[in-house]
Image 1 (cartoon, helix red, strand yellow):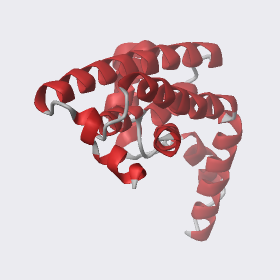
Image 2: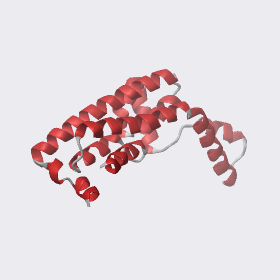
Image 3: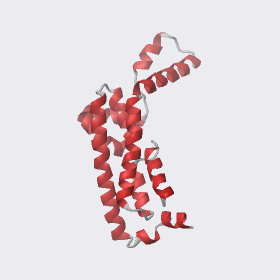
Image 4: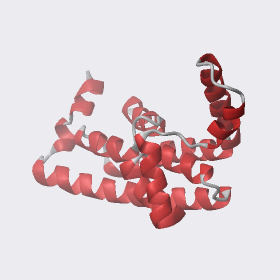
Length: 177
């Protein structure tokens, strides 16, 4: 069972997987909701805090990567500075910008994890010029809210639609053999 809970922590920490997805899967899999919620929160919060802590280094890395791409494509050095100022044109970045412009940092932090992911929300909050302490505070509040909502909804939903899931959950069966 230790491995299954460790897997919850690790998957929640990976930016591709969010605690919004990991918690229901773990609960459907037969794991206890409270340890799952705590471990998913800790895993996701750890990587968010590391991202916020090292955001300046990540920005520098992204800028260098973009400059290399532009140099390879043969664009002039004069456009490099302008291009470095321009934000990422991905759909998630655009959605994050819309959320930030409409609702501010609290809105981006609370709504963002559902629409663009918690890691992108934190990174974009920092990229849009918010203070590190404010981004950290709002992201932890947001992760706490999403953890509680997801764990409670999943727990009650699973117990309503799939009674006795704790006894025969697929994760429980995998690690018992």
